[in-house]
Image 1 (cartoon, rainbow, N blue to C red):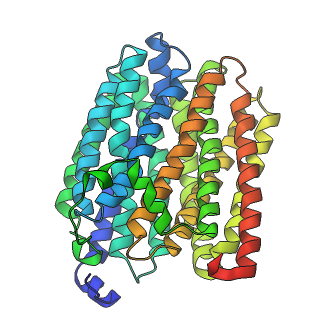
Image 2: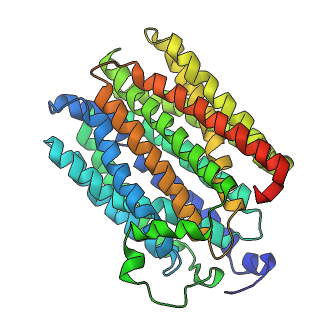
Length: 411
């Protein structure tokens, strides 16, 4: 491994490379959300089963979950910019299948194919930041990454909602084109990070390439504290995805609102998320011990999830709870990711970041699938699940903080 100091990193141009990377990543994250606000319309217009809004995402996240550790390992073998290219192109192909779907099977096939490559993309993003900023306040740069992803993603909802007023197809065509273009731009403009990571001393074997076998790597880096962090990540992902998927469909189905309103709500979330991450989240990263302070953000995230249960029948109070929930969630995500990065070493960082993504996907599988399958039976239950998930995550966080106070970094 190259042991250049941070000044060497700056001289090599990685600082400028990260700025370009974040700009391209913003475009990628926007495009990734173009299809979300029009998915309910696609399902209704094509007379598909209503459960598809959740089951389709669950299918994608199941594949994402299975392949996340594999792509994390691949980041040790090949430049992450190459994985970004592969991920973006594969994702765009999967979304083209999804956008052209006329049956439930075709939707699930397209989403499953896309899941393989979204896993590659998002793991490569976090690994690129970790590998190219080691020794240069990695936590702050991960916060910028997650902020860009969430704010740009919310703006993508808005753009997708406006495109949806033209047609469902317009949103998907724009998405496929931008995703593929971003993949090419990542490969052209991002630096080769090979010399700043430890490359294994043997070729990748079939066993290591097996997505299931890749999970065995957890034995190399797991600790009780890291296990609790992963549990919180997975459980909160259940609640987040249950809430988000049902809200998108609920305001279309129950309130009869167009995709434009979903986009407007997300635009407000984008502005609020950018504000909270550039102020409160950065303050917590730089001025506090996030092993303790993240608990308060998680508790704050739970409050609007609970208040939403009181306003099922009233659009604007209900929407206000949604906006507050996701603005605070924008601050929660980089804090959780940074807790994982803090516990990583050069030898384990790729695997840990891959497993972090896997836990997000695992929670998303159950949250999205449950939301879709239970919606026709009781459209309020998925929101109740969200509140319960965040309440449970908060209880685990209390245990984590108490153990940390007693044992420090050994917890």
